[in-house]
Length: 464
Ligand SMILES: [Zn+2]
Image 1 (cartoon, rainbow, N blue to C red):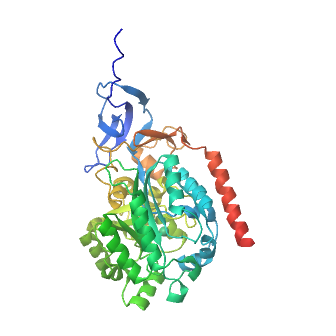
Image 2 (cartoon, protein in one colour; image 1 turned 180 degrees about the vertical axis):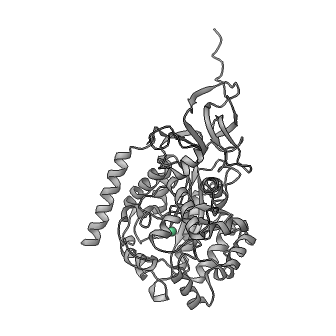
Image 3 (cartoon, rainbow, N blue to C red; image 1 turned 30 degrees about the vertical axis):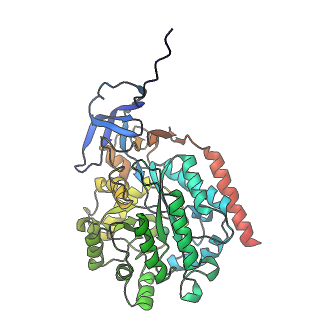
């Protein structure tokens, strides 16, 4: 008898059919009833009607009553805050920070791992396929905090843009954080470079990218801002920070640097197509023009900005000027829900309120912010963010025939304007990480229990 024939190496395929499709491609192509074929970790085809005949199909999904969209992309977060939620409930940004810094400076590796699992688990079960984190608190002796986040993302199976943040401007240097919560400039730069060297994967299929992310003008020295930009460009990685979040920040910059935040960023090398900033609430016309001219991206965080009474970012004006804009959950100490799909709705509603304009942001623009816009902001628009052949298979299959959504005239409106839609299936890199609304890769009850335990442990340390 002949030796067995070598196994067929053709990629395994998943076919989704009878499904409404919102591709979020350049033309916003949609199909009332169409199909998506996934081969391995790539999208092979998308179109109207039934799928073409293909072999090696390991799974066929009947998408009747569902909408398939690109997986959602989160562009700003602080995972560790998952275990410090519900505090400083009625404070503005600076008061909230001052209240929480002492607690944050006591975090350690098990706390950050549990918090990252909670943050990631909640986002992923709401359709996020690419997560981002901005971690900037590194207490001495706390363990490998960035490594704990990276481990949590790998366990859950989500694509991850991690950033190595930093703070070196403590109170004694005119900054907002207490001195015990900051690093030295040199230590921050050394550790950031080491994180890039150790973890950054620049490949098309990458599940892990690293960015350089000093925290904010009021917690970081000018030297660290400048040197961080030089480091990121030398390494070919992206730059991220908080910018123009509040009136108080603007006043701080004017007092300390003699200019507003955007001019300060420009003077330190921080405007460019490899930079994105969280919030950008207090931007005048010339600030928006500078972002558009340089290709600097924005992570719009509507719930956090509302929770901290920061104001309303001028997203419609940014989009009209050509600024890349994505959506961010922001840290969950200022957005306890930690969900991104509900932020699409919040972005639309808040921007209509802000502009007093019913056409400020459309339902489809909101979906684009949460998908393709996020991919652009993270520098991954060629790989993710829309359903197009050749792109990575990051797909969300939303169930829209249940009690919350059945009968809503337009599936995209049902997703954006309706209740938080349940997920039937979420693929990340072609792998199912959510099935029927539940995470497949980790036990949700264990994640919840661990987060509760670590939150109590941190509270006990503070009390003791
Ligand atoms: Zn933030």
